[in-house]
Amino acid sequence: MIRPRLFLCSGVTVPPKDPLRSGRVVVDLATTGTDANVHVRLFDLAETFLQLLSPRQEDALEIAAYVYAADCATKRGGQWDNSETTEPWRRDMTFIIPVRDLAFWDQDEVKQLLAHVLQFLSDDTFTFEFRQDARHTPRQQYFEFSESLNWEFEGVDRVLMFSGGLDSLAGAIDTAAAGGNLVLVSHRPVSTQSSRQTDLFEQLRNTARRPMIHVPVWINKDERLGREPSQRTRSFLYATLGMVVAASVKAEGVRFFENGVVSLNLPVADEVIGARASRTTHPHALTMIGRLFARVLGREAFPVDNPYLPKTKKEVIETIVSNGGGGLIAYTCSCAHQGIFQSGTQWHCGVCSQCIDRRIAMLAAGAEVHDPDTDYVIDVFTGPRKEGYERNMAVQYVRHATELGRMSEPQFVQKFNTHITRAVRDFPRQAEAARELIRTHKRHGEAVQGVIERQLARQAGGLLNGRLAQSSMLALIGSREHLVPSWTQYAERVTVLLRAGLPIACRSHKPKDEPHLQEVCDGILKAQHDDLVREFPFMRWGSGLTKPDWSVEERTLWIELKYVRKKTDLRPISEDIAADITKYGDNGRHCLFVVYDPGHLITDEKAFSEPIGRREGMLARLIR
Image (cartoon, rainbow, N blue to C red):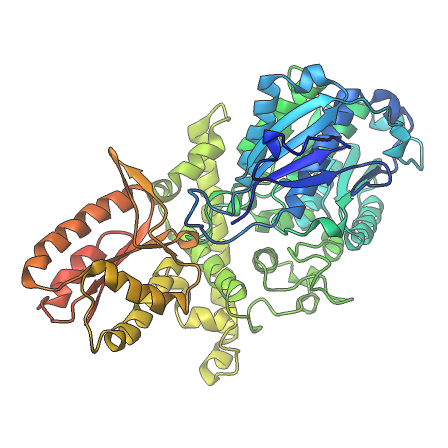
């Protein structure tokens, strides 16, 4: 279980018996002084920046840095806990932060908007208490400068967020090709990203030949605070940096460049729920961030947008190449494991979803000459993959993409209606925006399918003769694993365990009743699946509460156990299963019904199981 956190920022103190401390882990965060463990530095911006940076903007930067540090330091869990009704994945974080403009930040509407943005991005609970900042910290402790600002950058339309990846590079090249001057802002949490971003910027400046300035910002935390890799609030910090820079150069707003497939980030697997599918540039998140920043700056509007929402990754790469930037691709990095798994000469691990997406998009765009496979530690298509994340990611990526390519528009809407509705809620023409997003995803799916088909044809000999690693993406596809949903694979593994163990465990003494049977099964299952949780979570349906015998929420899978002891049990068991199908299906859960029938009282297994299996997301398995 993850205990709630209380973050005391900038030297704030809370008495030991204060109710805010009750049940919470207390963490001190500071950006200045001898105890500083959150580091904020800006380079390459003129001293006029200080004159334009208001106390409220300084507060916003500090709040974002504290939230980011807390996000990176607070480890997420992966299991449900019997004593709680929320997932440990969803953390509970309270901040007490001194601010310079207390009258602004202490407004209920501002605090609610701030919390709403962060909760949408991270799937966590955020609470803020602001206090008057009694410190008189010189601003120079925050900022360091190295060159004067050329005023041809004043009044640019947008400050551009520059991550060093393909999409932000394409956006910068696009903007330069349209005759715009570029103010590029980067977040640098580690030194390995710093050198890459610097090299890429220099190459971009030489290629684009437009006036441009790069504002690289170091914001990170002490390693002693802990490490959580999901970092769902990073885009809020990133956007806040953009807002501060935009205010300094009188820009109209901030612009992200992210293809629509990544921006919307539909879950590629059944277990990816909530913000586990990252929402860093989700349209609704950007809209809310823009509303908050407009209030911070005292403007009627402050756009935070993403013009690449209608594009696929393939189309992003085509934009780079068509504008003469193909040679810059080698200076970009897309890997989720930046600075962790790369060797000195290879920037891409080849196993994460970002590497898979990059490599497939390169081949789809015909740009592989700019992205040699030698840059990948593991070959995306033929390299061996470890059991667990690496294998699952390859299979689920292909499964998801091929499903998108095959779906009709009505099928797409039926499956992803909630995601599409949420994505277009802030658009003036919602129906048109929804159709465009659907078309984008279908083009992505078709492009992925085309690449996979060509790779299978190319490696047919290796597949036929067994030369390919059995755990490689192409071998897994050849064995049709991508056609089986992950929850179904998990359910079948559970069935195999119970079919092997239950008859042996009950050979001498049959369980006296269903609760006794559950205890026996629990012992068998827990030996192999420690992510299964007994009789949890509670779910409201109608006027009452219900719960499964076991759940594994990462796969939205619930398991129900039924025990046939006598012939008269068959009718009530069938009625219970019918009721469970409705209750669980209405709440988006898949369900495996395990029916223990040691006396073979169910005479026609097929007639019993098939009607259940015809219901989407439901399986029935008999054990004797």
